[in-house]
Image (tube, rainbow over all chains, first blue to last red; front, side, top):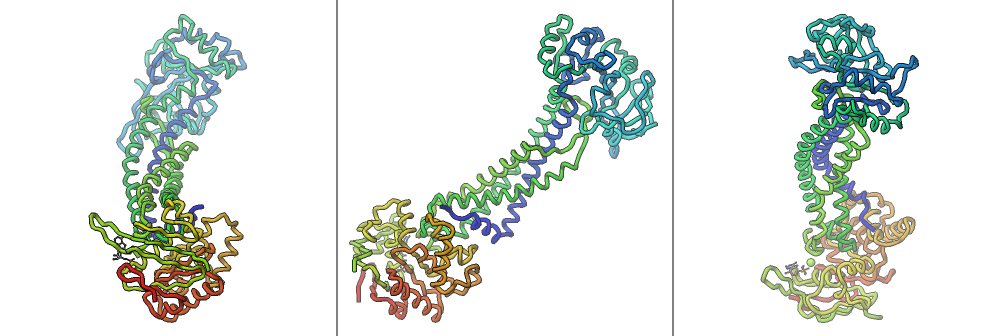
Length: 390
Length: 225
Ligand SMILES: Nc1ncnc2c1ncn2[C@@H]1O[C@H](COP(=O)(O)OP(=O)(O)O)[C@@H](O)[C@H]1O
Ligand SMILES: [Mg+2]
């Protein structure tokens, strides 16, 4: 049997000023730690939501982004004849040939410029991407130098109201609508007709990507093998759309994690040393109590456990407060260049199960690491010396 | 009456760096069951050291100590901890209660080392708190109690697991006359009514009068009256 946990909790309460200071330090570090994880999770969530699991995207081999990719009209013609490609009610391929380019425009509230992806789409794109809906105005008319802008672009860049114009290539294009892309990357894009973009940028018959819906989700491996063995498609790559966008998030998420966690781990040493100092003081103040408990028959291991529990309780209180505060970051969203695509991407902080799990592991480790040495000191005390110190 | 405690030729030498400090020299002492023994002697004469040896929180340099037939000098640390929880009730000069625990919880502490059910523990704690006259103060924290009351809680803690031997190191040393008197009456009652064997260290000749037997320790040697 061991020393009751209430003994530890009440000791923390009895020293509430020190406890509060230590807890605040831990809470701060955990807040930053959780926020970093939430941010990289947010990037991933946004890009994963952009792709669909039953859509297949065709790109040129080893193109990092849609911008760098090139797929010819002839190749698209070949792909669309495969029986695994879904069909619309009119019997046409359930697909879109997209052409993606970048424009550099002014952000609101600063002199910063941002790269925004302009996506020229075919008529199939609307049904293929049901996450996107019209929020204001109307859709563009093909061949008319008209565009619709994503809601995040509308919110975060200047002169993005319906009726205003944007310079793309050599022409001024009229904004005729705002699309709502929800929590997907499409909210950070400008959409227009593919063919007019092809003409404007002299691309001939070369699109960027070709995306189609599978007739059956389970057909992916079959069509992938077929397309990859087709002689005329040797320069192309076949991916699930969702996987492609997930890959696009990897670099950015990895960068946020790398830098953010490097900083928090350094901070965490500070918080850990704080917890350690607090626990050392607590052990020193309770020398006689420790001696008494040992005299009554409690083992060294009980003492060790009790002080470890106290340290873990300390870090858990801080950790839970930090995590709770970080959960409010879910209401914050911001927009920056995604290094994976070199274009603007709006994303938020996302509190997922794995973020919570890692945060809990993080503050438990802080508690155990900070409490270990003081707990060892407490358990190593000699009974008579401890009792004599009264 | 049979002998409960047999101290045989015990020597205790403390080592500090290279210096050897002899504290007890070849001490022998028998304490029969049911005895109430007062141990007197000047400060620094080794009274606390002797109590620590008998109660198994310290080990002799040589000699043996038998309590209820067990040679406690031969037990290892963890066996000794278990032995103490079963056989020794401690009463300290400064009460040594846990300040964050209530009177009830302080008294319950030794029972946490037993397999008693929650209900049995509660009954025992309430019973001993009634014995010391503090049944109505169970939920009080030590700082809400007077010194005498705190020492009575400590006595309740010492008897709650029904130990073979009660050890008191100057249990009245920090109390005013009236509270000290109450503690002495209580200890005498535990001895006469509950048949507890008690070894008590004291400076105070008046306190020693409560005991049956008085032994004097001087410069590490025992002299009985
Ligand atoms: N851990 C120790 N190391 C060295 N000397 C000690 C230690 N504990 C006690 N002593 C010495 O042993 C002697 C007896 O101490 P103690 O038993 O506390 O005496 P008393 O209780 O009679 O006042 C004292 O001189 C004291 O300084
Ligand atoms: Mg002493």
